[in-house]
Length: 397
Image (cartoon, rainbow, N blue to C red; front, top):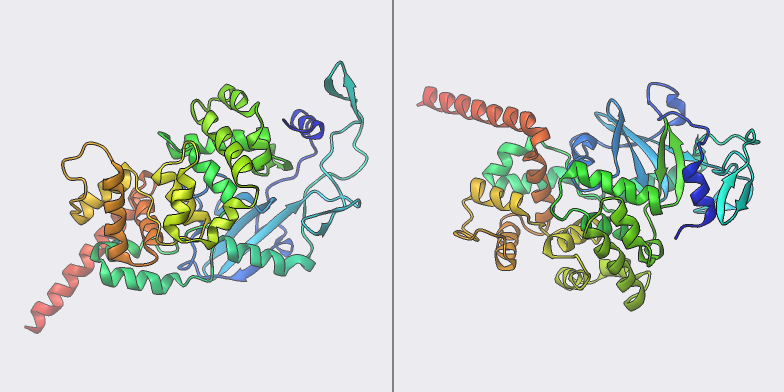
Protein backbone atom coordinates (compact mmCIF):
# COMPACT_ATOMS: atom_id res chain seq x y z
CA UNK A 1 0.00 0.00 0.00
CA UNK A 2 2.85 2.36 0.78
CA UNK A 3 6.26 2.27 -0.73
CA UNK A 4 9.17 0.98 1.30
CA UNK A 5 10.69 4.40 2.00
CA UNK A 6 7.51 5.61 3.68
CA UNK A 7 7.34 2.43 5.74
CA UNK A 8 10.89 2.98 6.95
CA UNK A 9 10.19 6.63 7.73
CA UNK A 10 7.29 5.79 9.97
CA UNK A 11 9.31 3.27 11.97
CA UNK A 12 12.49 5.30 12.19
CA UNK A 13 13.19 8.24 14.51
CA UNK A 14 14.33 11.37 12.67
CA UNK A 15 16.37 14.31 13.82
CA UNK A 16 13.78 16.74 15.10
CA UNK A 17 13.29 20.46 15.03
CA UNK A 18 11.02 22.60 17.15
CA UNK A 19 7.82 24.31 16.13
CA UNK A 20 8.60 27.87 15.13
CA UNK A 21 7.67 30.74 17.44
CA UNK A 22 7.48 34.32 16.19
CA UNK A 23 9.24 35.75 19.24
CA UNK A 24 12.23 33.47 18.55
CA UNK A 25 13.95 33.95 15.19
CA UNK A 26 11.40 36.38 13.80
CA UNK A 27 13.64 37.11 10.79
CA UNK A 28 12.81 33.64 9.44
CA UNK A 29 9.11 34.48 9.30
CA UNK A 30 7.27 36.20 6.48
CA UNK A 31 4.07 38.22 6.69
CA UNK A 32 1.21 39.73 4.77
CA UNK A 33 -1.23 42.49 5.78
CA UNK A 34 -4.42 41.04 7.26
CA UNK A 35 -6.67 42.56 9.92
CA UNK A 36 -7.77 40.30 12.76
CA UNK A 37 -11.33 41.37 11.97
CA UNK A 38 -10.86 39.78 8.53
CA UNK A 39 -9.30 36.57 9.84
CA UNK A 40 -9.13 35.06 13.30
CA UNK A 41 -6.95 31.98 13.29
CA UNK A 42 -8.21 30.65 16.62
CA UNK A 43 -11.83 30.61 15.43
CA UNK A 44 -11.32 29.64 11.80
CA UNK A 45 -8.87 26.79 12.34
CA UNK A 46 -10.66 25.12 15.26
CA UNK A 47 -14.33 25.35 14.33
CA UNK A 48 -14.57 22.03 12.50
CA UNK A 49 -13.72 23.02 8.93
CA UNK A 50 -10.28 21.41 8.83
CA UNK A 51 -9.10 18.76 11.26
CA UNK A 52 -5.35 19.09 10.79
CA UNK A 53 -4.44 22.28 12.65
CA UNK A 54 -3.03 22.27 16.19
CA UNK A 55 -2.16 25.15 18.50
CA UNK A 56 1.54 24.40 19.00
CA UNK A 57 2.29 27.57 20.97
CA UNK A 58 0.20 30.39 22.34
CA UNK A 59 -1.55 31.84 19.29
CA UNK A 60 0.59 29.69 16.96
CA UNK A 61 -1.13 27.14 14.72
CA UNK A 62 0.68 24.39 12.82
CA UNK A 63 -0.80 22.35 9.98
CA UNK A 64 -0.38 21.22 6.40
CA UNK A 65 -1.31 23.15 3.26
CA UNK A 66 -0.32 22.06 -0.23
CA UNK A 67 2.10 19.35 0.86
CA UNK A 68 4.06 21.64 3.20
CA UNK A 69 3.99 22.20 6.95
CA UNK A 70 3.17 25.73 8.11
CA UNK A 71 3.06 27.55 11.42
CA UNK A 72 0.79 30.61 11.45
CA UNK A 73 0.25 33.38 13.97
CA UNK A 74 -1.11 36.90 13.83
CA UNK A 75 -1.06 40.38 15.29
CA UNK A 76 -3.88 42.91 14.97
CA UNK A 77 -3.06 43.80 11.37
CA UNK A 78 -0.61 41.13 10.16
CA UNK A 79 -0.69 37.42 9.36
CA UNK A 80 2.70 35.80 10.03
CA UNK A 81 3.76 32.48 8.50
CA UNK A 82 6.67 30.06 8.67
CA UNK A 83 7.11 27.05 6.37
CA UNK A 84 9.25 23.97 6.94
CA UNK A 85 11.10 22.06 4.23
CA UNK A 86 13.13 18.84 4.10
CA UNK A 87 15.60 19.76 1.38
CA UNK A 88 17.88 17.76 -0.90
CA UNK A 89 20.26 18.79 -3.69
CA UNK A 90 18.85 16.10 -5.96
CA UNK A 91 15.64 17.12 -7.70
CA UNK A 92 12.82 19.43 -6.73
CA UNK A 93 9.58 19.31 -4.75
CA UNK A 94 6.65 21.39 -5.98
CA UNK A 95 9.00 23.28 -8.23
CA UNK A 96 11.38 24.11 -5.39
CA UNK A 97 15.01 23.04 -5.31
CA UNK A 98 15.71 20.74 -2.36
CA UNK A 99 18.88 20.62 -0.28
CA UNK A 100 17.99 17.79 2.08
CA UNK A 101 15.50 14.93 2.18
CA UNK A 102 13.72 13.03 4.92
CA UNK A 103 15.66 9.78 5.14
CA UNK A 104 16.15 7.03 7.72
CA UNK A 105 19.33 7.12 9.77
CA UNK A 106 20.88 4.15 8.03
CA UNK A 107 20.82 2.37 4.66
CA UNK A 108 17.73 0.30 3.90
CA UNK A 109 18.06 -3.45 3.50
CA UNK A 110 15.55 -6.29 3.15
CA UNK A 111 15.39 -9.31 5.42
CA UNK A 112 12.85 -11.97 4.45
CA UNK A 113 10.51 -9.38 2.98
CA UNK A 114 10.78 -7.08 6.01
CA UNK A 115 12.30 -3.62 5.96
CA UNK A 116 15.12 -3.05 8.44
CA UNK A 117 17.50 -0.17 8.99
CA UNK A 118 21.19 -0.43 9.72
CA UNK A 119 21.86 2.02 12.54
CA UNK A 120 24.39 4.62 11.45
CA UNK A 121 24.95 8.25 12.19
CA UNK A 122 23.10 10.54 9.76
CA UNK A 123 25.37 11.98 7.12
CA UNK A 124 23.41 15.15 6.42
CA UNK A 125 21.31 17.73 8.18
CA UNK A 126 17.71 16.52 8.30
CA UNK A 127 16.19 19.37 10.27
CA UNK A 128 13.30 21.28 8.67
CA UNK A 129 14.34 24.70 7.45
CA UNK A 130 12.42 27.81 6.57
CA UNK A 131 11.87 28.47 2.86
CA UNK A 132 14.04 31.14 1.31
CA UNK A 133 12.59 34.55 0.49
CA UNK A 134 12.73 33.63 -3.21
CA UNK A 135 9.38 31.92 -2.74
CA UNK A 136 7.66 34.53 -0.60
CA UNK A 137 5.25 35.56 -3.34
CA UNK A 138 4.16 32.00 -4.11
CA UNK A 139 3.58 31.20 -0.47
CA UNK A 140 1.66 34.42 0.05
CA UNK A 141 -0.60 33.42 -2.82
CA UNK A 142 -1.11 29.97 -1.26
CA UNK A 143 -2.27 31.59 1.99
CA UNK A 144 -4.50 34.10 0.23
CA UNK A 145 -6.15 31.26 -1.66
CA UNK A 146 -6.49 28.97 1.37
CA UNK A 147 -8.14 31.65 3.51
CA UNK A 148 -9.93 33.26 0.51
CA UNK A 149 -8.60 36.65 1.55
CA UNK A 150 -10.09 38.22 -1.56
CA UNK A 151 -13.49 38.03 0.17
CA UNK A 152 -14.28 41.19 2.15
CA UNK A 153 -15.59 39.92 5.48
CA UNK A 154 -16.37 43.36 6.90
CA UNK A 155 -18.78 44.03 4.05
CA UNK A 156 -20.41 40.59 4.38
CA UNK A 157 -20.84 40.96 8.15
CA UNK A 158 -22.48 44.33 7.53
CA UNK A 159 -24.91 42.83 5.02
CA UNK A 160 -25.76 39.87 7.25
CA UNK A 161 -26.20 42.09 10.31
CA UNK A 162 -28.59 44.36 8.42
CA UNK A 163 -30.71 41.38 7.36
CA UNK A 164 -30.45 39.44 10.63
CA UNK A 165 -30.58 40.99 14.11
CA UNK A 166 -29.51 37.73 15.79
CA UNK A 167 -26.41 37.54 13.61
CA UNK A 168 -25.63 41.17 14.43
CA UNK A 169 -25.74 40.45 18.18
CA UNK A 170 -23.27 37.58 17.80
CA UNK A 171 -20.98 38.97 15.13
CA UNK A 172 -19.03 41.50 17.20
CA UNK A 173 -17.36 38.72 19.20
CA UNK A 174 -16.96 36.39 16.23
CA UNK A 175 -15.44 38.53 13.52
CA UNK A 176 -12.93 36.97 11.15
CA UNK A 177 -14.52 33.52 10.84
CA UNK A 178 -13.62 32.63 7.26
CA UNK A 179 -14.46 29.63 5.11
CA UNK A 180 -11.32 27.77 4.06
CA UNK A 181 -10.64 26.77 0.44
CA UNK A 182 -9.23 23.32 1.02
CA UNK A 183 -7.94 20.67 -1.34
CA UNK A 184 -11.11 18.83 -2.52
CA UNK A 185 -9.71 15.35 -1.84
CA UNK A 186 -8.65 16.23 1.70
CA UNK A 187 -11.91 18.03 2.44
CA UNK A 188 -14.24 15.33 1.09
CA UNK A 189 -12.49 12.36 2.67
CA UNK A 190 -12.04 14.15 5.99
CA UNK A 191 -15.76 14.82 6.15
CA UNK A 192 -16.60 11.21 5.31
CA UNK A 193 -15.00 10.54 8.72
CA UNK A 194 -17.42 12.92 10.46
CA UNK A 195 -20.47 10.65 10.37
CA UNK A 196 -21.82 10.22 13.94
CA UNK A 197 -18.65 11.76 15.31
CA UNK A 198 -17.33 14.80 17.22
CA UNK A 199 -14.48 17.17 16.38
CA UNK A 200 -11.79 15.82 18.72
CA UNK A 201 -12.38 12.21 17.60
CA UNK A 202 -12.46 13.24 13.95
CA UNK A 203 -9.10 14.99 14.41
CA UNK A 204 -7.60 11.76 15.73
CA UNK A 205 -9.00 9.72 12.84
CA UNK A 206 -7.74 12.15 10.20
CA UNK A 207 -4.33 12.23 11.86
CA UNK A 208 -4.13 8.40 11.81
CA UNK A 209 -5.28 8.39 8.20
CA UNK A 210 -2.49 10.78 7.18
CA UNK A 211 0.19 9.11 9.28
CA UNK A 212 -0.68 5.71 7.80
CA UNK A 213 -1.28 6.53 4.14
CA UNK A 214 0.19 9.99 3.54
CA UNK A 215 3.69 10.97 2.46
CA UNK A 216 5.91 12.07 5.39
CA UNK A 217 6.84 15.75 5.45
CA UNK A 218 8.78 16.45 8.64
CA UNK A 219 8.90 15.92 12.39
CA UNK A 220 8.63 18.74 14.94
CA UNK A 221 8.94 18.34 18.70
CA UNK A 222 8.36 14.62 18.28
CA UNK A 223 5.23 15.09 16.18
CA UNK A 224 5.35 13.63 12.65
CA UNK A 225 3.61 15.55 9.89
CA UNK A 226 2.33 13.82 6.75
CA UNK A 227 0.60 14.97 3.62
CA UNK A 228 -3.01 13.95 3.08
CA UNK A 229 -3.24 10.59 1.25
CA UNK A 230 -3.64 10.59 -2.51
CA UNK A 231 -6.70 9.11 -4.19
CA UNK A 232 -4.51 6.24 -5.38
CA UNK A 233 -3.46 5.44 -1.82
CA UNK A 234 -7.03 5.63 -0.52
CA UNK A 235 -8.34 3.41 -3.33
CA UNK A 236 -5.97 0.51 -2.60
CA UNK A 237 -7.82 -2.74 -1.89
CA UNK A 238 -6.09 -3.18 1.48
CA UNK A 239 -7.18 0.21 2.84
CA UNK A 240 -10.51 -0.89 4.32
CA UNK A 241 -9.06 -3.59 6.57
CA UNK A 242 -6.15 -1.31 7.50
CA UNK A 243 -8.46 1.51 8.59
CA UNK A 244 -10.82 -0.82 10.42
CA UNK A 245 -7.85 -1.88 12.50
CA UNK A 246 -7.25 1.80 13.24
CA UNK A 247 -10.77 2.28 14.61
CA UNK A 248 -12.54 3.77 11.58
CA UNK A 249 -15.40 1.25 11.72
CA UNK A 250 -17.89 1.39 8.85
CA UNK A 251 -16.28 4.60 7.59
CA UNK A 252 -13.28 2.55 6.39
CA UNK A 253 -15.38 1.00 3.63
CA UNK A 254 -16.79 4.36 2.56
CA UNK A 255 -13.32 5.90 2.31
CA UNK A 256 -11.88 3.09 0.19
CA UNK A 257 -14.95 2.63 -2.03
CA UNK A 258 -15.40 6.34 -2.70
CA UNK A 259 -11.77 6.67 -3.75
CA UNK A 260 -12.04 3.57 -5.92
CA UNK A 261 -15.23 4.84 -7.57
CA UNK A 262 -13.65 8.21 -8.36
CA UNK A 263 -10.59 6.52 -9.82
CA UNK A 264 -12.59 4.03 -11.92
CA UNK A 265 -15.44 6.24 -13.11
CA UNK A 266 -14.11 9.79 -13.17
CA UNK A 267 -10.34 10.14 -12.86
CA UNK A 268 -7.91 12.08 -10.69
CA UNK A 269 -9.04 15.56 -11.76
CA UNK A 270 -12.76 15.00 -11.24
CA UNK A 271 -13.10 16.55 -7.80
CA UNK A 272 -11.24 19.69 -8.86
CA UNK A 273 -13.41 19.93 -11.98
CA UNK A 274 -16.52 20.24 -9.78
CA UNK A 275 -15.38 23.74 -8.85
CA UNK A 276 -16.53 24.93 -12.27
CA UNK A 277 -20.03 23.39 -12.28
CA UNK A 278 -23.22 24.76 -10.65
CA UNK A 279 -23.74 24.11 -6.94
CA UNK A 280 -26.60 21.60 -7.14
CA UNK A 281 -24.86 19.68 -9.91
CA UNK A 282 -21.71 19.40 -7.81
CA UNK A 283 -23.67 18.35 -4.72
CA UNK A 284 -25.57 15.65 -6.61
CA UNK A 285 -22.35 14.37 -8.17
CA UNK A 286 -20.74 13.97 -4.74
CA UNK A 287 -23.81 12.21 -3.38
CA UNK A 288 -23.24 9.39 -5.85
CA UNK A 289 -20.25 8.32 -3.74
CA UNK A 290 -20.52 5.77 -0.90
CA UNK A 291 -20.88 7.44 2.50
CA UNK A 292 -21.61 10.90 1.07
CA UNK A 293 -24.96 12.33 2.11
CA UNK A 294 -26.30 15.85 1.85
CA UNK A 295 -24.26 17.25 4.75
CA UNK A 296 -20.91 15.77 3.69
CA UNK A 297 -21.54 16.88 0.11
CA UNK A 298 -22.40 20.42 1.24
CA UNK A 299 -19.30 20.60 3.44
CA UNK A 300 -17.14 19.68 0.46
CA UNK A 301 -19.02 22.13 -1.76
CA UNK A 302 -18.63 25.01 0.68
CA UNK A 303 -15.11 24.37 1.96
CA UNK A 304 -13.34 23.17 -1.18
CA UNK A 305 -15.48 23.63 -4.31
CA UNK A 306 -16.25 27.37 -4.23
CA UNK A 307 -19.99 26.99 -3.51
CA UNK A 308 -20.50 29.82 -1.02
CA UNK A 309 -24.27 29.25 -0.96
CA UNK A 310 -23.95 25.69 0.34
CA UNK A 311 -25.30 25.44 3.90
CA UNK A 312 -24.26 22.22 5.68
CA UNK A 313 -27.07 21.22 8.04
CA UNK A 314 -26.79 18.77 10.92
CA UNK A 315 -28.91 18.39 14.04
CA UNK A 316 -26.84 21.17 15.63
CA UNK A 317 -27.65 23.65 12.84
CA UNK A 318 -31.27 22.47 12.90
CA UNK A 319 -31.42 23.42 16.58
CA UNK A 320 -29.97 26.86 15.80
CA UNK A 321 -32.66 27.36 13.14
CA UNK A 322 -35.45 26.42 15.54
CA UNK A 323 -34.10 28.10 18.69
CA UNK A 324 -32.76 31.37 17.30
CA UNK A 325 -34.84 31.88 14.16
CA UNK A 326 -38.16 30.18 14.94
CA UNK A 327 -37.71 28.31 11.67
CA UNK A 328 -40.65 25.92 11.28
CA UNK A 329 -38.91 23.59 8.83
CA UNK A 330 -39.22 20.06 10.17
CA UNK A 331 -41.55 21.02 13.00
CA UNK A 332 -42.85 17.82 14.54
CA UNK A 333 -40.14 15.72 12.88
CA UNK A 334 -37.83 13.65 15.07
CA UNK A 335 -35.14 13.19 12.43
CA UNK A 336 -33.47 15.37 9.84
CA UNK A 337 -34.99 14.15 6.58
CA UNK A 338 -33.74 15.22 3.15
CA UNK A 339 -36.74 17.55 2.77
CA UNK A 340 -36.17 19.19 6.15
CA UNK A 341 -32.48 19.54 5.31
CA UNK A 342 -33.24 21.34 2.03
CA UNK A 343 -35.90 23.55 3.65
CA UNK A 344 -33.47 24.73 6.34
CA UNK A 345 -30.78 25.42 3.74
CA UNK A 346 -33.25 27.39 1.63
CA UNK A 347 -34.39 29.33 4.72
CA UNK A 348 -30.85 30.51 5.44
CA UNK A 349 -30.04 31.16 1.78
CA UNK A 350 -33.08 33.43 1.55
CA UNK A 351 -32.04 35.22 4.75
CA UNK A 352 -28.32 35.65 4.11
CA UNK A 353 -27.94 35.59 0.33
CA UNK A 354 -25.24 34.11 -1.93
CA UNK A 355 -22.68 33.73 0.89
CA UNK A 356 -25.13 31.95 3.20
CA UNK A 357 -22.66 29.15 3.89
CA UNK A 358 -20.15 31.66 5.25
CA UNK A 359 -22.73 33.21 7.58
CA UNK A 360 -23.76 29.77 8.80
CA UNK A 361 -20.10 29.04 9.64
CA UNK A 362 -20.02 32.07 11.95
CA UNK A 363 -23.10 30.94 13.87
CA UNK A 364 -21.93 27.33 13.96
CA UNK A 365 -18.63 28.50 15.44
CA UNK A 366 -20.36 30.70 18.01
CA UNK A 367 -22.49 27.76 19.18
CA UNK A 368 -19.57 25.41 19.89
CA UNK A 369 -19.07 24.66 23.59
CA UNK A 370 -15.45 25.83 23.51
CA UNK A 371 -16.59 29.34 22.54
CA UNK A 372 -19.61 29.68 24.85
CA UNK A 373 -17.88 32.14 27.17
CA UNK A 374 -17.08 34.38 24.21
CA UNK A 375 -20.68 34.13 23.02
CA UNK A 376 -22.12 34.95 26.45
CA UNK A 377 -19.91 38.02 26.65
CA UNK A 378 -21.18 39.14 23.24
CA UNK A 379 -24.81 38.71 24.25
CA UNK A 380 -24.29 40.60 27.54
CA UNK A 381 -22.52 43.42 25.71
CA UNK A 382 -25.35 43.64 23.19
CA UNK A 383 -27.98 43.81 25.95
CA UNK A 384 -25.97 46.47 27.75
CA UNK A 385 -25.72 48.58 24.60
CA UNK A 386 -29.47 48.25 24.05
CA UNK A 387 -30.17 49.46 27.61
CA UNK A 388 -27.86 52.46 27.15
CA UNK A 389 -29.56 53.34 23.86
CA UNK A 390 -33.00 53.13 25.47
CA UNK A 391 -31.93 55.38 28.35
CA UNK A 392 -30.62 57.98 25.91
CA UNK A 393 -33.91 57.91 24.00
CA UNK A 394 -35.92 58.28 27.23
CA UNK A 395 -33.81 61.28 28.32
CA UNK A 396 -34.43 62.99 24.99
CA UNK A 397 -38.17 62.44 25.26
